[in-house]
Image 1 (tube, helix red, strand yellow):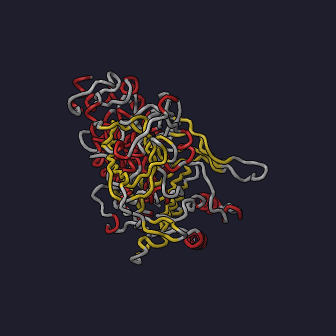
Image 2: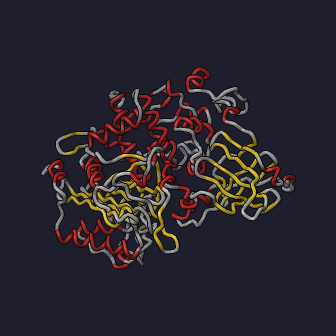
Image 3: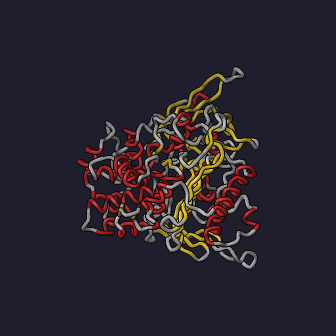
Length: 557
């Protein structure tokens, strides 16, 4: 039976298997307080095909989720981006073969004016470096959450001021925004846009419902979209969907919305080496590029005397694809977390199995054990009781939202003031001003009258971040109250209402501290993007009279 014919039928699954799966998901909906679940499984070329939605996609309006409901899949979008990039590069440079991935972007596309913080990265970075997260540059977090950018060109221009976090190609260092830039470069090379290339790919795949987060979205009122929710005081609370737009300008890194039906086709593409039914959508050799280990990325759970049945590890990362082992079987896939949506997308090429599960909000760990449960059912393995009862089962694939991961927070450093500068004291009036940097945008601090009739500092950062500040130390001001819904991002990730401090280094400079750590470059009073050299590697100090366009930068290069 061809996959095309399978797609015309609703589901192909043994009734007893469907009953077991449905019972498990419905139990999770109730016990783990989930809003809605989207689930898909495929086995071989349609031997088993199941796509369904559970729960309510819109609780307030009584709308049920189904196989056609659109869920945000977060960083699982990256794997789609990698396929589109690999396919298009092969079409543009057929004679290069896989070497196209290791050819510097400056050589493949001189007119793009690809520029990063130093000359070496600017001249040597390849698509593999970006898609395998090997650049070791600070990824954008604060400005992305605040939605501080004018448009995608503003985002990608500012990436030249992203500071180094570690040595180039020295380690795996996750970066959402650079995946977006890779897609933007691809569109430029093909004399079109990435959105056009993606749309054509989705059309070729028959993924006609799949789309991506846009700044123009009215998410709550759009057809078939799952409304996001988060748990607050044990109750599902409606999440502000405007917060989803943090990914809109770099949607290639995490902004796809798809359905349970559409994702079955994408899993089949991988399991059948680029083929759907009788059509070769992507050349087999190009699909193989995706799963070549390109970065080391080890995590997961190995067997112990206490738990001899567990083996679930990620050992490497290909092109936007985690490569791992489960129960001795090779596994590829990617997690996704666009708060509060949580996604797991796993494929087992040697078994012909694909598993997808995502939730629209609720217990953030609720979906973690579903892939293993489904894998065991498909393999005829009895699921251990402890797994069935687990609400916190971890697996080896990262979800891809580093600002919700404690391990990332711990790794980031805050600059300490020199001893002779610790006496700096900033008054409320002195703190007032507009501050900026080349990397994260601008923050406006004003002095307002609060509800008690007292003067208090108030700050605004981008579209989504506003709040009140209180002085907690001579040169430090802390968040006292949010005036926007940005706190929902943190709350949905189990981080409470968030933590923000402004730590002044002198009267004109402060560090923006979140959760006790520094995710931005320093903000300086009156500083504009135009104050920086368009080519930081050549002269980071020299101001320029205007924001250089890409054509200006090319001339300077």
